[in-house]
Amino acid sequence: METDNTTSPSPSPSLTLYSISTINIMTQGRMHLGVRGDKRRRSPTRSALNFQDANNAVAAKTMRAELQRLSGLVPDMHERKLFQENMNGFFELFTRYISERSKRDNLDWDRIQSPSKEQIKPYHDLPSTTSASDLTKLAVLKLNGGLGTTMGCVGPKSAIEVRDNMTFLDLSVRQIEYLNKNHKVDVPFILMNSFNTDEETKRIVQKYANHNVKIMTFNQSKHPRINKESLLPVARSPNSSIENWYPPGHGDLYESLFSTGLLDELLGQQKEYLFVSNIDNLGATVDINILNHMVKTGSEFIMEVTDKTKADIKGGTLIDYDGQVRLLEIAQVPEEHIEDFKSVKKFKIFNTNNLWINLKAIKRLMMDQSLTLDIIINNKTTDSGEKVIQLETAAGAAIKHFRNAHGINVPRTRFLPVKSTSDLFLVTSNLYSLIHGELVINPQRMFNTVPLVKLGKDFEKVQDFLRRFKTIPHILELDHLTVTGDVTFGSNVEFRGTVIIVANHGDRIDIPSGSVFENKVVTGCLRILDH
Image (cartoon, helix red, strand yellow):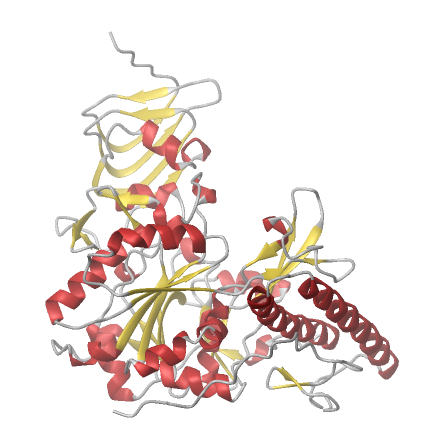
């Protein structure tokens, strides 16, 4: 088995920020001085272009100076080197952003086509296999950069308990441990943390020391938020408030794998394939059929997609753009076409962010400096009212750079994210059972679809959610549940069909233990007090 032993270029010990006189200089996403911009790009007028170029040059120069100043404030040489690497990556994104902004190089909606049969293959057409030989070449990576704040929790989201007193992280480790034991392999488990989750995650994973899983962690980049007016970093020092920094999206995966040396380490261990997914997607388990398909077809990149429902209208989708398969995110869609993007008729599938990637191909593209990802501009307003910009990238956007890349339309069961307590309600119910860390839908469920559950703001935080349910209701025959207002539930409650429960402002509804609701709307006030 051949391995790629090409040595990675060692990072420069100083901040390698480029001098810029003009910004129409981008080729393959990297900066090269004196190279003219793509002649196919249209500028409004020559005078407007000169004005924009002048502004861009000033913005790049002042940003470079500010990043150099921030770098000089880091006293420790090792820490300064890491900081400089982060700022180099940020500066490249920033110069691409101001260049693309001035050129107004928007997506041509008329050139967007639905993916061909070759670009998206049905999962049920894949050959079924029981051979686990390809698992020896596999590594599994979970994106672990998010916090649990939206669900009212402190610390990494992966530390939230989701089923049988086990966290997202517990379930993932249990899955990989069973995989290794059952197939007698050594699949490593990797966590890409952010500066928000890294320290706490490293403490948590110590409890798995005696498990049959090799756990590796690395930290993704840390970028400064940009003031929208000045186009300068909000941070005034390297140690400024955490609100002044952000992790630049999971598209940073490739650069961080490469720059930390973990990519070379995996290749040195004869690993060739990487399965990437979000830590909160409980349906993202290792699938031998997909892995075998990847190996047999020589595909360097596979994206799992699944059929879109009305709940998924904002999810990114695969498109055919001039004969090339590409990921289209809602942030890239012109405003006048947003409703077209959300249409279930036109865009029938969406990206689950379950990605299968060839490690040697990542190495080749990183060495060639050609793995350029579309920039996602995330406008935010801080608590103090300051308007800021975050420049982010998505891991799936890399699909256009890999050979024989395509999507696989997988069953909905492979997309089971927990983004809210409504999702938590589903995964903790009798709709699923837990087998070796994997959630499996209850065979007694008569329908292929998962119920639609909408819990109101009184249930948003995990603590409030747990307080309002004595036990999670039985929902095997449920189609749709909506609950709003001050509502609490006793034990052994059952819902069937469509159930809507609304407690108006000032009212409270206590659902008695043992209640069965089928196709009912409940409103008003019902108090049940202990005697």
